Amino acid sequence: MEYLIRFSQSHETFRVAEIQALAIVAGFNMEIIHYDAESPFCVVRLPSEEAARTLIKRSIIAQSIHEHWGTGGTFDELHAEVKKKTSELWPKYKTASFKISLDNYQGTRPNKQRVALFNSFSYLPFSGEIKMKDPDEEFTIFEQWDFKAVERNLPAPLKVHFGRYIAPSGRDLCLKFDLKKRGYISTTSMDSELALITANIALAAPGKLFYDPFVGTGSFPIACAQWGALAFGSDIDGRSIRGEGKKKSLKGNFEQYGLQQMLGDMFVCDLTNSPVRRRRILDGILCDPPYGVREGLKVLGCRDPEKEPWVVEKGKLIYKEPDFIPPKKPYSFLAMLDDILQFATDTLVDNGRLSFWMPTANDEQQEMGVPTHPCMENVVVCTQVFNKWTRRLITYRRLPDSEVDSEALAQKRSHVPTNGVTADELNPFRRHYFNGFRAQAAVDSAIEAAPK
Image (cartoon, rainbow, N blue to C red; front, side, top):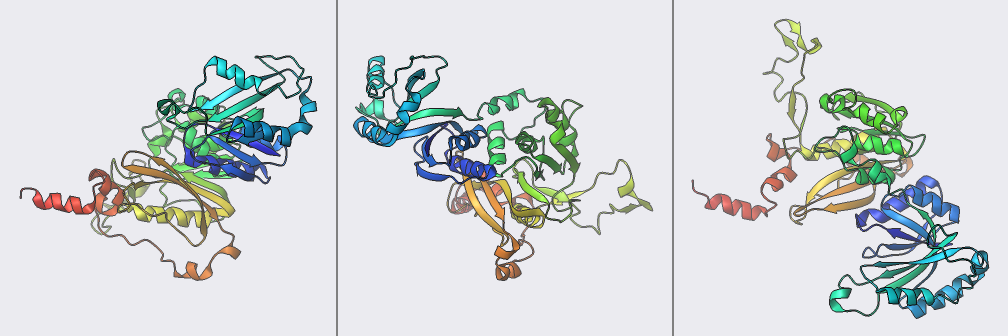
């Protein structure tokens, strides 16, 4: 049966990725019959109405799902398709109470025209009571107008659909997990909508283990826990995990939502010095790594171990002292991306997913490519565009060993080469950010023209 999904007007590039992931989680096939990124309407084929309800109840980017009765470029075409495709369904709703509503995307209709549209469906042999509140069945006319329809005084929409309402989405969860209502956050906490969508795309579900190596205040583990996964996390800065007390802490956030039973463990480490065993036991890894803009990226270690006596001082093993603070050294942004992929390769189960956020400049000359690894297949790239830069949610699937290109794996270098020692030298995105994303030629010209 065909169903029509009504998406929200946000994060367009995430729409298909999320519903495809939810179909995988639910374990049924879904075929996309028609979708246009310029439209919030998507027609899909699903095995049953129950499958439609299952698909939509976890979706954050969608609003609702409807049994698809017809689509047309005009109302005449729509009526013809409704009569042709659904006449055998009409007796099921003959005596049910019902109402018809109008959803006119990017358009508007005066009340008189709305009534006329409703009356144009009078051929449907429904004899039940018309109820505007809590009817047995709700039917919706969907109109898709040109976004300048009013300005251009266009007489008709681009496309029209008709469907029977099935179920709402889980979009209300965005309000429940709204950062404004959360007890403990930081300036880098991922907003609730994108955290829940990321967890959906990563296939978080009951019985799975998920891990965030840059956990911060816990936005991603909380989203995974909401979908039933057991959540773990770590961070190089233990203060972000401990917070400011029992309630204002990462653990306190889990308790606020009644998800403490889904909290595995949180610990302090960095990705390159992690106690996580290199065993393929994780079902998913999702994270928003630091971009190194506010301050340069760092990992545990010394710039020059011979000049920094951080292990032994005055005959004492100072790293065993309770007040010992381990030293840090600069870290390459590109090396970090490579390390994330290698860590996922070593710890994800077959077909486990890695979803992480990565920034890039909008200018093609400064754009950073999507990282690759022979053991990781890129599933989808979703984008959130800002003024001069974009952040991308990149999702990979851990290939079973039988699908890995052994020759490519043998040729892979052990690490991305790094040139330089300063934060800007090690992080091309940071360098472009503080240059205002100007082309390098323009930067060089400005430097030459500056007074000596």
